[in-house]
Each structure stands twice: as C-alpha cells, then as structure tokens.
Length: 179
View 1: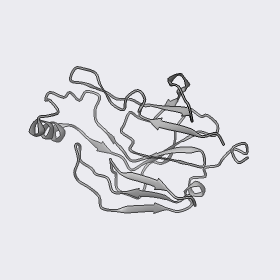
View 2 (view 1 turned 90 degrees about the horizontal axis):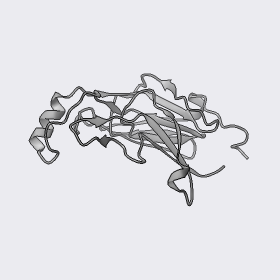
View 3 (view 1 turned 120 degrees about the vertical axis):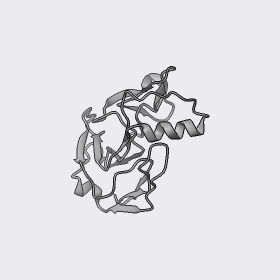
C-alpha cells in the first residue's frame, strides 16, 4: 500500500480562510498528497464533504477516510470585532448560530471515490465539536471529549468506543490494497 497523507477542510492551503473583510470562507473540500518528498503540485482534490463544516475528528480505517462530529455556523456569519477583543469575541460567539454534529461520514480512498457516504446520520454519542479520535490496530474507533459551544465550552467528559468499526460500517479494502 502506498503511503499517503490526507487532509480535510482544505488544511492546504488553509483551514478556514479569513477573507480580509468580516466574513469567513467555509471550505468543503478534501485533498491528498503521496508521501514522502511531495510537492504542492501533487495535491489532488478528492471530493466535497456533505456540508461545509469543521471536522476535527478524522481517521483512516481500511483505506476509508472517516470524519465524526464537527460544527457548522452560517455562511453569513460576520465578525465585527477584532480577535484580540475577548469580550467582543464571546458576545459574537454567543450570538452566532452554531450546530454540532454526531454523524459519521466516510470517503473510500481505495477506489478514489469523490463522494462521501453517510455511515451514521445520528450516532449514539452526543453531538460535539473539537473532539479527539483514534483508531486501534484492531479497528476500534475511540472518541474523546469535545464541546458544544462556539468558541469553546459545553465540554463532554466522555469516551466512546466502537469495536470492529470496519465490520460494523461494512468498510472493505480493495484486493489490490491488501497486497
């Protein structure tokens, strides 16, 4: 199997781009570059997420890129204060519509698919953003903490586990990937 690094939400060239005015540009794209010794020209767009969103919980399992949870704010969100203005930022965050997700979506890297598949629209764990995720060598997915408030807060103190996730979600490798 060829080593590759995959980023979501346009970590290259930017995660959320501040357009220079008071509006954020929300990205929906995913990029991949083979390693080692890559160049910027080697980045390839893989496909758009089901919605523009923050997707902090990202992992690769059986050649599938999975993202869990995350958040969304409206494209019309306008930042009228400087980020150094803590009180102004807090008021901005409190006044901005903010939605957290508890879904699991996946992109098949084995087949170079450009279409994300919703594996679970509503997982049993509470919706969250800023969570950490991991996967064990046996294919168990772990989700740690996260929060529910824009700008931080509403933190969960839980850990969730899904054993044999590739079987549960029916994620398969192509026979070429197993060689």
